Image 1 (cartoon, helix red, strand yellow):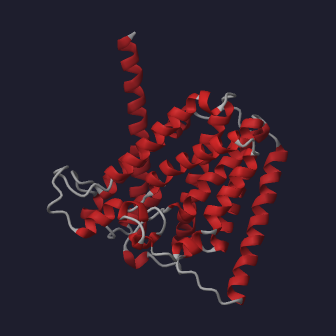
Image 2: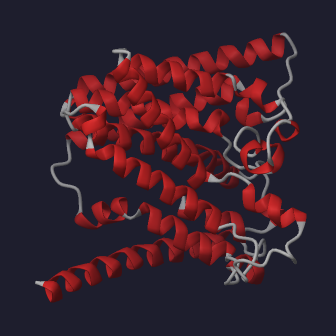
Image 3: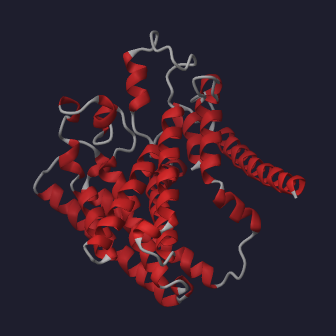
Length: 341
């Protein structure tokens, strides 16, 4: 995520061609970052929620989930805030207002968490199967997206709401199809909560590898069908074969990580710290790269002007910087606790 944004901001336009093998590989992996990130968010949220063996109304993670969702949505809008004067919008252009209301990854994950909570509530009240509920809902968001994308939602809804349904208002991550990846993560989260140590087995790795391979085959078949019937879909992100391929890739990656974890007894502590501070890393590195209403970003100074090696070096520097930020915050927290005690 960090290196993807950094290279995207700095790499020269002349080098952005898939005819270059290195760029083609980087571009492919960058396209996989968001589905992996969202799937993982859904997995972790549902795993933690379902690990608390209490009814919905008594589960303390309901309140935590709502607070987390509200924080993500708030921060998502703050990163796009259109004016440094905070309350004076008189000089804000229509284009800036549109950019402000465009849905990015934080708003998407925030609302997806609320959708997950709703699924959990309805499933419990109706005594349905949790896995089935997640699969059905994820499938709806993923596969209905080509049809949802073709509707001009701004004709029916105000701008802030319409931006959540399609990319026509410059939203990078509307609910369709992107919420589907978060909800799909709930399937794995629920399974892990019911079988806590299953990820340490070879059977689990093999099972997800098979699922991943199956999704790859479905992706190939769906692409052939689209070509055969000459069906054109406006937004490539919503095409069935892209969606199936991404889900398959996430499953394959899950299988690989599970296989590696069988042979790892202990995860380095600094990796755990980084994992706990992904939101901090996300916000800080975006402000550095893109700036905010109150600060300029690196893109103003060096945007689209670096060579390949310069971009690679800048990505390494950014990753190192984010690691140091996490370590410093951790040390400050420890010292604050020592002062309190």
